[in-house]
Length: 185
Image 1 (cartoon, rainbow, N blue to C red):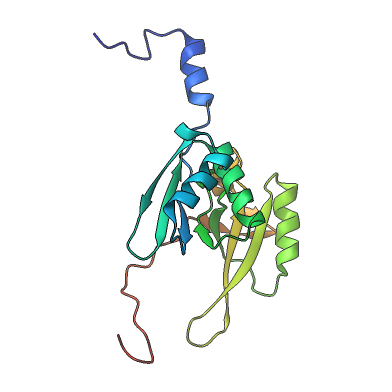
Image 2 (image 1 turned 135 degrees about the vertical axis):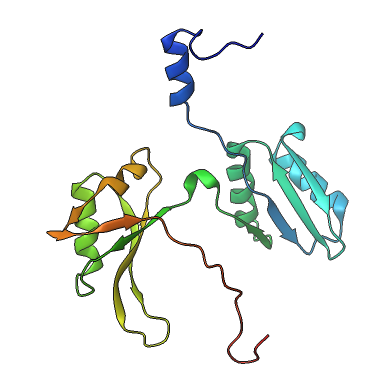
């Protein structure tokens, strides 16, 4: 018989809801690996045995999956120090939280918007005015990348910024197929 949240004490329900979700680190791609035995010894000196697994591809590339975030950071740091050619993605917990601010005058400097958001408790990494794709004219849209925090979703409740009435939205994904304007492929 499965217990519902009503059967649990209130402290157990709130502690489960307050725990931040630990995301699995993204894979690391290492290029130009011709000697797999040397790569294996390199990985075992950097990490413990049970903290990673790897997969080899035909083009001398290997994909390394690491189980813990601290091991991921340690391996990336070691690969940078040894100038090993590799590619990695940003971990999900460190990605910026992007929102769109509508109806802000395009002549407002991004630093003013950054300061106004900081006054409201939001730290922004980047504020970018959006331009029309064909005419390159500035629009009344701003992309804002916020630092990952617990209060990021509260920015959607924002109605006024810099004494202007605004709308805060999530960015829309492009649904059209990308086509080259030069070769049409």
